[in-house]
Length: 436
Image (cartoon, rainbow, N blue to C red):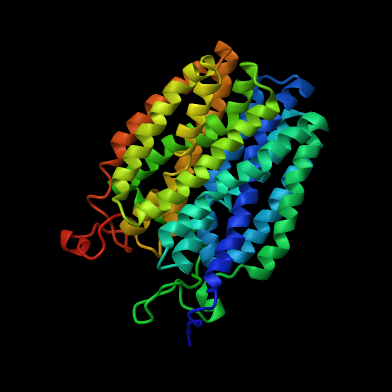
């Protein structure tokens, strides 16, 4: 029988959330590493920017593509098993990348293995933990878990840049390999599939109405594909996926991958550039946590419209910021940093409201796949444009315009949601659960 803990005792949901935060932090550190390694790899092997960027593009694409399948596998086999397998893959892939001698080996290790591993520890994991373990404070928890990306940048980027400059890029890669290995015993000891495993209700749940997900039967891959086919019938899904495609292109793909080399080309030392990207993470930690709090209180569509509009203006300003000295760059770091991944909590909230909490993991996994497809496109595209034109100005300006387009898309979301059976809900059914 399910039971609740004494009011003053820490609910186990907060322990799971804390361990999940650490796992996502390490995953973010792994994903931020290519920005530090781009120039050292070019210098050692003589590869151009497009060649190295392709490895990052493969990584980002598989990171996103694996998300919905990871969610379906978690539904089938449990969260802990998937996390452990993912951590093993990341540690092995990053460790083996230190032995590369040819571009295809970099594509295989960093692109394929690490991409698939980090994809299983993406924001899909945060969405599943927040929705399974929390009824109250769900938006806040999702905001904090999303902010792990920023914290990962803050913790890892200056350290990795210093190690890459003072020792070697291989030593920097081994740092994140060790971090992934440290997370393994924590995941095995503390992570559980859901509150039922501990004989608990979700935090803040009403015992009379809670319906906790259980492990599903059947083929998880077929379940993921079926969910995609059903979701594609919904205009709201297409709008969410399209706007999140732009989100990925304007964050991980462009800024996360190319801000450091772009800054170096403007005379900024690599360690300073990495610290600047980490500082963006500091402001993102504030912005994303606040976004989670706001998504519990303000219509998520309008939050997203503001976020994409402000991001677009920041990106349009970036080429001028490089020419205006310290003040211009500081203004960009603050303005853009507050908006880095603030889009995630309201996007998760809309996904859960529109498609049901039972399906949120897999549906949001596909939306995240669109995010990472955008990131992969921008990571390679910006590298290719740099190879052709010699700078990043076209990439930054194009990304700014795309973000403004996304602001127009998101205000159309939420007018015709679908139920857990994949069918559109009637207007009367919206009264009890209006979207974000």
